[in-house]
Amino acid sequence: MPESLRVREARTLRDLRAMILFPWRLYRNDPLWVPPIVADRLARFDPASNPMLPHGEAQAFIARRGSRIVGTVAAAIDRELDSLMGDKAYASLGFFECVNDAAVAEALVSTARDWARARNIRTLRGPYNLTPYDEPGLLVEGRDRPPPILCAHTQPYYLDLFDRLGFHPWGPDLVCYGVSATEYGSDINRLPPKLLRVAEAVRKRSGAIVRSVRLDDWDNEIEMARVLYNKSLAVLPDFSPLGAPEFQRQAEAFKPLVDPDLALFVQVSDKPVGFVLAFPDANAALIHCNGLRYPWDYARLWWHTRHIKSISFKILALDPDYWGRGLDALMYVELAKATLRKGYTWMDMSVTGEDNPQTNKLATLVGANVYKRYRIFELAL
Image (cartoon, rainbow, N blue to C red; front, side):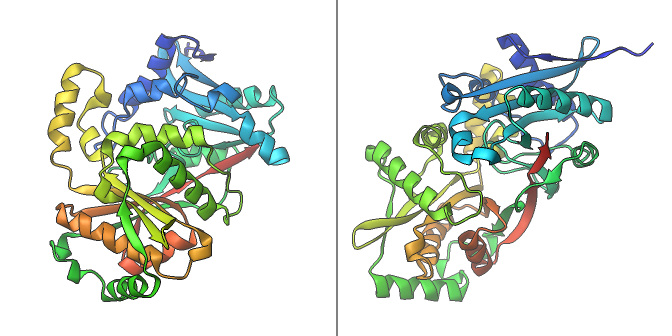
């Protein structure tokens, strides 16, 4: 007689750890999977660490057959965001991991759906772990290399499971661009000639100055970056501004990776009007480090961090009042100089919506190609 399928809330720290560790079994034979940092995943369910939770709510669930875990899911509501969205409010669906079994997927999604309905929410959207800035989407294309930092790696059969459950794509796909730097060596003059011409022309014409982030004025720099980020993306449909606590959470998590040579502001007449942020792609080291579950994993992290050859270009934000002036090219050239000088051989540009005019224009200009594609899904309740 087959064992019954049960879905229960993850109520204790032990339950949450079991949920977070489930992918170790699910992806054990997948060489591209990067084990997540366990402490980071646990912190996302801690109101003291996740600034969304004091004005929101999240619940994780575990599906079991007998005593064996066969799937996990979490649902979350950001009440502050929902109040801005009105009738477009949604509950995020995340931490979705599942064996290849439609019955298990149905049980997980039904549980998340009931949880959202009980809170008067009529739409599920995701995957988001737990916010739209945490490993968004299902991987649609690009299974030939590991994901860059902050990006997801999901089972290929999830696409079929979501389709069977009635999910529909929401919004434009998210894409990762990539460009190899091996052909340039350390010679900046071998960058695309058009890019160099545009950068030099705008430097002379506007008097723009590119400077490094000031680590000794971190809080003010981060707030300046947040304002520019929100202003830059406000032109996109359905964009939701990123609040100071959430931006600060993301910034603090990656502050140890910040290299001032790779975090740059552009100023015109002493006014910051844009910034770019890249940092060493920590996933190139973390793929070897088992989620930092044991003390010796930190020794592995130290070793592999010294040998990272790729950087991840995460943000290009430019005040729309300054679009069309070539300032994005100028920032990229300065970033490229540092990239080549430091010996990196690959640049990831991720993730960005297909409808993001600035990033897509720049990616084309520098000869980058899409190497990964992610898709967000929505389910009406």
